[in-house]
Length: 639
Image 1 (cartoon, rainbow, N blue to C red):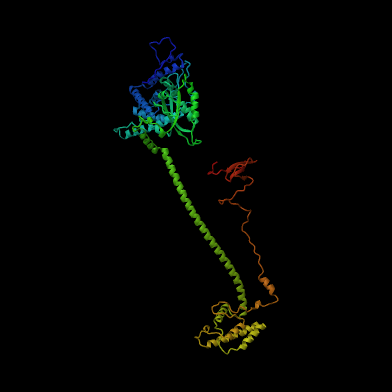
Image 2 (cartoon, rainbow, N blue to C red; image 1 turned 60 degrees about the vertical axis):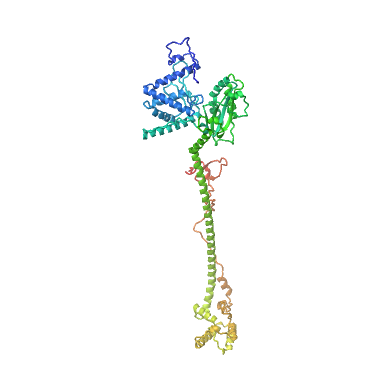
């Protein structure tokens, strides 16, 4: 059985029978080791005096202290030299809660214990009473001299000192997580009791063993070996008191670690590499501690961690202080993955051993809120990628539709342009046709255009030519002579009289006979040719009489001048309603490109100092603004 045996050397020749260890005078003239030895029972007696107001209160204190110690041992938090809480620390912490809640029952005080230290504002010290100086020359703890202490817990006896000096930032992180877990369990039990006071409360979950060996992906085994059993015990005690410095001062500061935890319970076995040069005696006289850690991937450089430098510094600066350092005393470190841990690590913790531990690990990983959040984010990213792909396809389809619409619009526009050009050509043709028709109106004696068109159709149909075999060819010759002589009016008058006579003769003939179906003699065709008409078939649609020259086309002295005035080019001018100062350049998004002025010079990056200007981001974009001018930064823009 391991016990703590204290020794103190007083500054007196004999120990009086009425010796009072609680009196501050016993510390007069003692050395530092005696001071620490005597202060142990002095602090215990003073804490008991603080909580010994009533017997019920003292029993409540003892019950809660036993529960907290059992909880701390089960969760791997009971070791002062490893950087956690010891027995004195738990006594002071429970006494502090009892001062805050003096009338609480044990269950309620245990709930208040986790609530208080879950919300405690570290590094605010835990003190049962203010420190005092008895005047015996011993150093007393003060707030000014404890700037780097993480979680101070001050002893009430003189000289006041910090009983949690070994607690580091890494161990405080572990303690804080366990306080949160304990409060969650006890609070749920308290709520269950409030709903049903007769129900059985399950306290086993609070005192359940820690899942240290399945909580981390990486582990280090620190194997302490010695040549003999006595040497190994002395050497192991010294190394154990320095292991917290290896974790907090060396590994945590030199490696990119997110979380690191030293397991305070030792394994009575030599867990070292087979290639390590250890003798059989060293492997027999050895014990091993484990350190679990999480790597911070955001701070990683490369894919490997080099812990050799930190381990070498630990050997040089801490372990070499042991005296006497006998050959064979050594510390062997080995790296393990969680699935590579030896079976001895899971014995006594899980009923099914390592296999049951791995099942428990999978369950914890599935309910881990961080992993659930990662899965949710991964699922969200996957959905975003799918939505982006769908949106891209929609945009491609819209682009195709837009291009198709643009092509159709261009085709419609080209058709409209062609129609406009055709209309213009038709209008130009109509102008010439109207001029020609006007000239023909002057030639035809009082006939309208409709009547002339009807006569032309009848002429093409052969209705104006009488099928009389006794036609006089001499009259046709006379008419041809008149046309050749240039007497156009007499020629047209004679033709008109002849047509009227021919129509009257035709009417007197059989009304039912269709002249278009009768053949025309060669003599009649010759007469038509002499009159200047083009003889065509019934299927053709050419205009007859196109060879006739109207009067306005006959040669005259002023024909050239009239033609020049008629077809002279016209001058056309275009005037815009608004003037243009200059050209405006647009960027890819259709926004106007700011070319700058005397107060602003655009620039995509800093090109050096310019006199009278400052490089900044404003409402006109990134560039050089004149010094002294007010520049408004858009609300949706950040540097």
